[in-house]
Length: 254
Image (cartoon, rainbow, N blue to C red):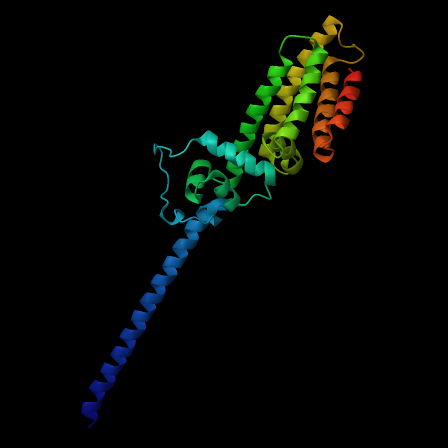
């Protein structure tokens, strides 16, 4: 009797062990798949939370791969999103919706939300600086150019609220004290505008159009403070008549 029972117990034990190992292998495979998915999401950075049907099939970009979109168009769309929401208020999904791209494409092109923000800020700098320099370097009386610049800033605020000019101005308020890269970009922008204004005030003083009671540098910096103050004020007092009075009052001092 005992000789016939022992093989049965061994066979039952073998089956139990085999079933246990099979379940263990299945569990291990599930854990590996979950870990791989988690690692992919971690590498995706801030864009990893975007939801789009195309994202599950998005493949990494390799050097030399042709772009399926124009960077400038994407950056312009990002400028609009960041200008409206700020950096902290912009989610990955906001950027996906605003640019029309999936998370993979944004990540491959710009690396992170921070990277896209810096590119958007540079784009804003280029566009606004070009417009301001065109006004300041045109021929004509110096005070007329300064007046035109102040009115241009006011018109920009009224005609395109929340667009590129807002990003230039408010990036300094939101990120300037806690983001070294943004602070450096804004410093370079301000210094370039300041240098142009110094040249303009020098020209005005040499022609006798501008009083020489202060240096051209001091007057340029005073004008910049008034200019940026006007831009902030226009966000809180959207009354053109009031702001035109402010402009007239500012120019009396120069």
